Amino acid sequence: MPAITSSAPGKVILCGEHAVVYGAPAIALPVFNVSTKTTVVARPAAPEGAVRIIAPCVNLNSSFEEIEDNHPLRAAVSLVLKELGIARLQACEIRIGTSIPIAAGLGSSASVTVSLARALSAFLGHPLPDASINHIAFEVEKIHHGTPSGIDNTVITYQVPVYFQKGMPIEHLAIRNPFTLVIADSGWHSPTAEMVAGVRERWLADRERYERLFSKIASLSIEIKNFLLEGDLAANGNYLTRNHELLRELGVSTPLLDKLVNAALEAGAYGAKLSGGGGGGTIIALVNEASADTVTTALEQHGASRTITTTIQPPRGLQ
Ligand code: MEV
Image (cartoon, rainbow, N blue to C red; front, top):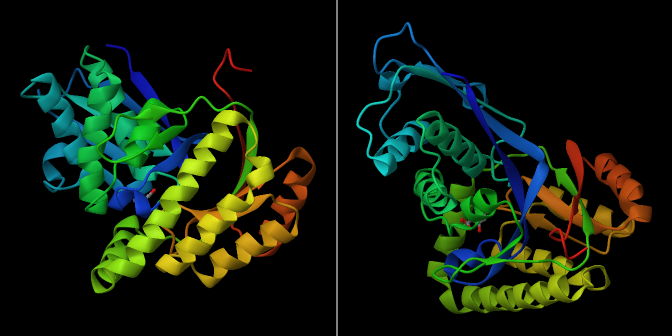
């Protein structure tokens, strides 16, 4: 049987992280400059059921049986088998490699699950549809993050810009004009679960204040969605910066993230904000062709460990 490979992108949140956990809408974009690749290869000489998972990104090189029950990779494999109604996996090796930094706000956990679920189901002869892949990735996100909103698995499964609100149908955003983001990794990585738990603790202590912040963030997501659909996000880049201010008030920014946001703005970005769980991780800066290099240099000079420039394109046919 030939080796089967599947890839999944990373993601950024353009607006609405954290508030989305409490029912506010948020906007997420796939980032194809980074990705996860999973390859599944049959081991014809190995005994039935001898499955090995090799994932250097999480320091794992083990047989399936040796991996603890609630490990996200074991859970992902089990969920694929359950979805397909298959009791036992034939002998194979599952190799996972990712260029997405872990716990950096770029969706590494959802990307790993989506690429694994797609590759494994295809290897078993029954490639799962997007809805099933998304469901599996959401279940595994719960192991990673406790109470995920579902936005990361959704944008990474469908690989298009999404306007996401818990409990509502997924809206694919057919953006009107391309725009460019510089993504800067602060080099400080912070588990999303801890950041989400911190917001929950503060929300429980002062619901009124936090719900006011969530609702201000919700209004920004609605406005930004309209700019994306009607054409002029760049002229309204300050909405991203306003989202950053509200994230600061939620307590998820850090002095380094604030410094990177300010450096991007001073270097000519239209707007900038932290993206993802915060506490470290990445910021995004909305730029144009003329400012992209200057903003990138400023971010590197102010401590970014890595930068990525990505352009989000309208769907084909709308260009
Ligand atoms: C993480 O990319 C986004 C958060 O809002 C968590 C979630 O929505 O599950 C921080």
